[in-house]
Image 1 (cartoon, helix red, strand yellow):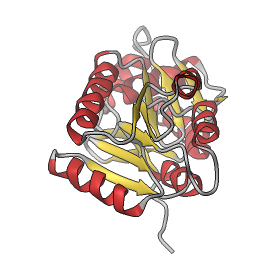
Image 2 (spheres, helix red, strand yellow):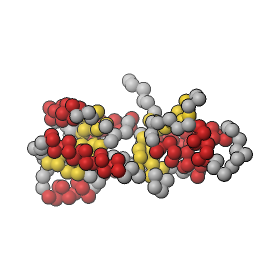
Image 3 (spheres, rainbow, N blue to C red):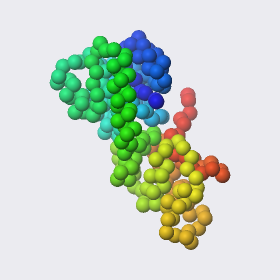
Image 4 (cartoon, rainbow, N blue to C red):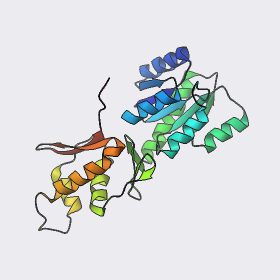
Length: 225
């Protein structure tokens, strides 16, 4: 499980990250809102932990920004602001849970497990890069804005997003898109995949073709400086 920890207290962040890593989590740490947004541009997360007292922005504003741009992974606020109004505001702005400092690491882990379990049990939304896909209504969003897709492109995307980063055979996609068309040309699928690939570029997502195996949807790796 990949976690995003947004915490400007370096010592506390290292302690949390070390503790969670020992429980099997992969933790990326951001000390500012800007660092968090940069990390989110390049990878997807299963859950986030958010401090409200960040040096470059208020955590509530960052939370609102994340939700407005389509980030749907569960977020737990971890803050010294323990007032009732603070907790209500945080939850109203899109947080999935709220834990006040000081806290016990065991409770933090238990709350994370509950959030991730809840998301896994109801996986209506899937996200890769900035692409957010609603499996129930088959809506595709990039940074909160709708992506204009044809019915066949949506069908392809729905199959690929059921198991992001997993290979889907060409035959499976072909049967999904051309269910009732026995005379469809062999290269018709490649045409639709190519068009869909172009439309997903802005979301930092690509559809990789693996010769002899099929297709896989994945985030585009950004070159390091």
